[in-house]
Length: 287
Image (cartoon, rainbow, N blue to C red; front, side, top):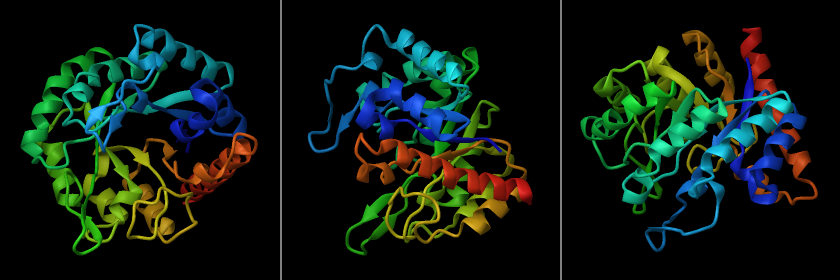
C-alpha cells in the first residue's frame, strides 16, 4: 500500500515546491495536488479572492509540470488532486477543467471535485456530465466526496450531498461512468448527526471507492487531525478497506495537524504524518 498526503498544509509555510520535497524526504510515496489557490473562496465575503498564484495565471500548466518534475526527482509521484470549491461559485466552476488539466500534467489519476452540498444526486450529476468528456480526454477520473452541513440548533453535522452511504451510492449511480468514482473522507463519515460510519460507507461503495481523505476527529467535529490521535476506529476502517479489496492509495488530509508547527519544525510534523500513514498501510498489508 502506497501512502500520500495533501500539500496545502505544508505549502502554507514553505510553498508548494518545497512542500513536495519535504513530503518525499519524510517517506511518503506520493503527493496530493491541492489546487485551492486556483480559486480561493472567501466564505465571509462570498467571493473568490484575487490573489497572485501561478495556478491563477497563464503559467498554470508550467507550474503543474514543475511540481511533477520536483516529485519525480525526489522519487515520488502525484496520485490525486483536489479541485477548488465550493462548486456553487461560478468562478470556481470555471476553474474545474483547469484543475483536471493540471492533474493530468502533474501525473495524477484522480481529481476530487466536491458536489454541491444542497443538490440531489441527479442535480449534481449534471455538473459531472459536463466535465466527464474533458476528464476522459485527459485520462483523469473525477471523484465526488462525502460532504456535511451544520445544524446549529443541535450542534452537530447535518445531511449534505453524499453524507449518508445511500446518498453517496446514489450519486455514483446517477452518473454511472467508469471515469466517475468515490473519494471517501473518513473524518466526514464519522461526524455526529450523519447516521453513517466510514466502514459502512466503504462497504456500500465497494469498487467505486478509488480515493481516500484520511484524518481523525472526535466523531463530532471536522478536526482533520493525525490518525489515531482522536476517536475514529481505524482498525475497523482499515479492515473494511481490506474487505472490499481497495486498490487506491492511503492519502492523508490531516491539514489541521500541521497548523501547530512552524517553518523551523515543519519537517518533524510531516515525518509524524508519514509515520501515521505508514502504520495504517502496514496494517492493511498485514491483513
